[in-house]
Length: 55
Image (cartoon, rainbow, N blue to C red; front, side, top):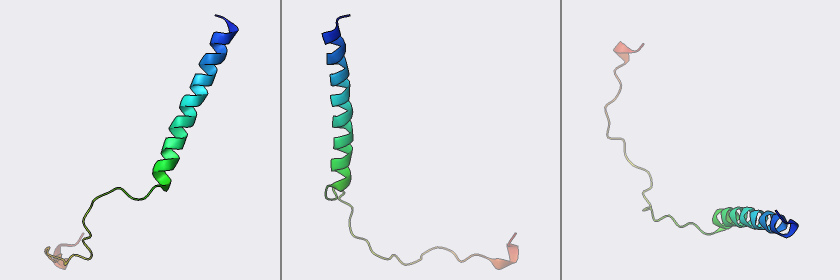
């Protein structure tokens, strides 16, 4: 393997790592992209626990 091919392989690997990290950083620091509705506080609609059978 020639030296120039080794250097090209190393620089391509470094470029891929940099692209991966910069993509993650841009996703972390970008505005939210979720489209969930604003729900707020929901009322409790379940059953109240029976304290007689508590273990």
